[in-house]
Length: 206
Image 1 (tube, rainbow, N blue to C red):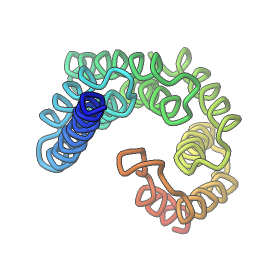
Image 2: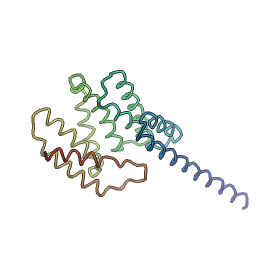
Image 3: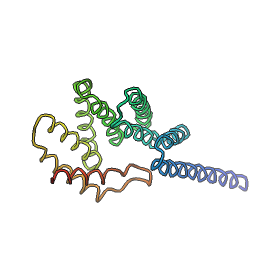
Image 4: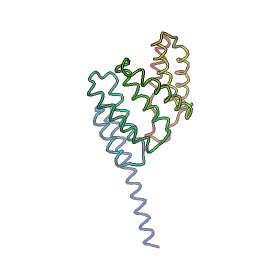
């Protein structure tokens, strides 16, 4: 009995220690993100390699690379960042299939390419973005990031074709309502987007 108790104690200690290391690593990566996105992405990647059954580190590593890509003018830099983001999304999808948060991230990769060169990438990637947001919305119609990013994409399309964006402003309002009541599964699950929704809604009212 004593041996079993010791073994159980060792297993529990190991699990707690492992969880603690993961939490410390994620917290450090989020802190780094404020000042050094590249280092944050690298740390998220290292955590992802250690946490092979956890989609969150790969998700955030991808997100950092995607955010850096919007506004990037150097195609070589953009390609490297978005290819890395795509690889990380693939890793996350392998762990968590049909995850609306990951689907949104995939849509953002395509959106970054369209934003860089709409003439080259718009025709092939725009339908994929539409399908991804439709899929995410079918899975999680009350996920605020799904509603917000779908609305932003729809607004961009409306502007491109000279159409009224007002109907999609209502979707942004809906997203803000959802943000008010959204509770992430853990401190590290996605919880971003509220500030962006407020910015988009403010632009709607101008």
